Length: 516
Image (cartoon, rainbow, N blue to C red):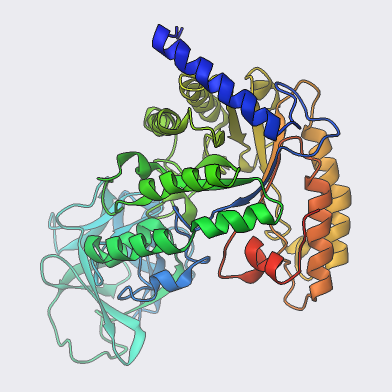
């Protein structure tokens, strides 16, 4: 059990005094319980796309990357033109590659690890890497390496007249070919000037899915260029005037997504570049200057907790689990140690959007326990936020666990977007859903003596291309009404975004939304 030293006890006393002062500014929370009929503690905006890049929010950041449709994590299907068959890693990996599939599915999907604009490793569905083997007859491609090997580097050469058509050069200098369905080999040295249908070295490469996160951006540009681009982005995307704007328009907090690599700044592991920590320091200063609170949110955990671009994933696989717990706790410890006594710190969120079933409940509880204790070493009263799992998970699965943790909060994300149910619904229909369904969902997880509830992400963007201004206003008002009853408050996604209806700033400036 942890015991405070005399100096730490004095530190705690100072923190408690700062917290008491903060409660004069934010009187609506009842510690260790529910805020009842009071207004929420937090009316916040997420500073998404700032310290953790998301390409859909700032697509122009990716424009100058060469071959920017082939970034890390791009999923491709590769079809032999001659055989009219897709290449497949049999059993998802662990054996030879064949060219024998009519319809591409999971085993026929290859994920790229980018080395430079034209050179890549290929990863298959069981997470093995593709290489070639000279054992036996021929130079056959196999997928059975845990890490990219010396035989696992491939150069993709596109046909300038038809970008779908490619040749793939192996590290032995020869090209892949599929002469028969039973094997793909790296031994073609024929005529490379022609791209005829009967040429066994000609393939079609179809892009199925891509990622545009910070890993993709920094690795796509390379260290030197990425350093310049990211520094300019951090210095201009969010500035102190934005904090003034938020405060003047009814917000009292920001939720700031950060990536795990921030703890290593100014020497983060490649391909990440330094500078985000200084930007975060500035955010705390601006929050203090404008009488606002900061919710720190570990948005990207080591190994990726959900496979999304905003989780720092390289290739979309979920690799967060028991083996990553200590590493992730170290990030929380770093953040709590650096900002734990700062008067603007409002809460620390231990992890954003872990995805079930890839992240197990047992692993998550173990991590949340350790992360909570790490925060408590530096601040005994700051709120600790536990994010609900997305996907195949019960929305109440953390309530009894969190109820045992003092000053704990459950974060839920409510989007009327990611289901065909919402497609085409107008503003009134979405508003009715919020008033009925979302209100009921909030009531079901708001328990007496339970953790506080935080709607950490929502948007007024409709899943309807023909919506009117009145539609957006009705939808926004409904969410402000309902989420305003969340016992810890809410945070709009996001403060700024290239897509207007996702931007709090744009919605306010254009009179789509107004806070009371």
